[in-house]
Amino acid sequence: MSTATIRLTEQLIARASVTPEDAGCQSLIAERLAACGFVAESFDSGPAQFRVRNSWLKRPVRRANTAQAATKNVAPKTLVFVGHTDVVPTGPLDAWSSPPFVPTHQDGKLYGRGAADMKTSIAAFVVAVEEFVAAQPDAPLTIALLLTSDEEGPAVDGTVVVCAALQARGEVLDYCIVGEPTSVERTGDMIKNGRRGTMSGKLTVKGVQGHIAYPQLAKNPIHSLAPALAELVATEWDRGNAFFQPTSWQVSNVHGGTGASNVIPGTVVLDFNFRFCTESTPEGLQQRVQAILAKHGLHPADGYDLAWTVGGLPFLTTPASLVNAIQKAVVDETGIVTELSTTGGTSDGRFMAKICKQVVELGPPNAMIHKLDEYLHVADIEPLKNIYRRVLENLSAAE
Image 1: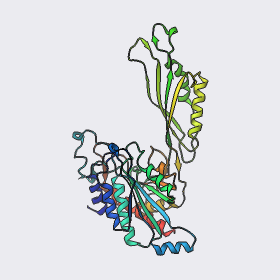
Image 2: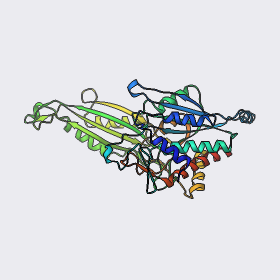
Image 3: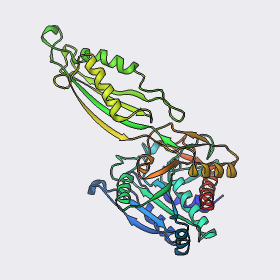
Image 4: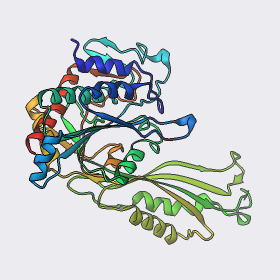
């Protein structure tokens, strides 16, 4: 079986767009959507050796409908599809059953890097929009796409840059669908109507290096840290809520010592991360960590350095226009009653949530993302495109 969505997915997979490369994916999409009335803008960013390609493609509502909306004292609503054209590195090429940038079909599966994360979603966006515009060229809904090649990388020159530019010029976004692979068994069985925030800390506890046989002449920072670490591990930060699981605190790395077995180290470094829900704030969590350290005799003046990095705030879209439109689209297309979830890692939804009140992630099954021999079942591709098109229809009908 070959469809417009599958063919475009294959074209995108064939472009080796490992972060921060775009490999022409966004130009291909811009050329296709120009025929539907989309105007493309570039917001490229980053140093020359890590140049990120960012595109903003927008199709305004036709003038007649804009005037009609004005008589009702309401502006046309805007829906933006958000996606990334970059993919993670392939890993060892000889470990793949087929070349990762050669789209390959076998046993009802489409293989290739990006098949699941997330070139199929982008192809489904595009074809859904093409079909919708062809059927309803005068629909009272502004449609846009935001594409970046810096989602799998540092994510400092990608979607966040475009969001800042759009916000600065007063762009109003009403609905956002991020095409991250959110489903579990079948396309549409789970969507993300929010995500937890992420905040990392690097704690350096200071001691005095010395010979291990003369501990009275040294100060072991690992011993100083141990009681506080035990309490940090045992602390309940919050209890979550109806939409979010409780905030978690996890250690990712501990490093201390010179490698010699007879030396007390001068410092110990602890790397940790919070995945926090809307019941907690970065400021509140930081204060609680510092209070625990102080309780166990560790103070910034002479005991430790602590650097914080807030990677993203939590966001939540409660059931309203967008969630309702997606739920209806999924059940009409697949018969599935989709599950709302806020689990998993971060996505570019955290940036979109700062400029758009309703943000939902909806994409294909995620079992094979970032893996060797990444694939997606072909049977999941057309339903995804149809769900996106039905969402457009549902939101347009509600205007």
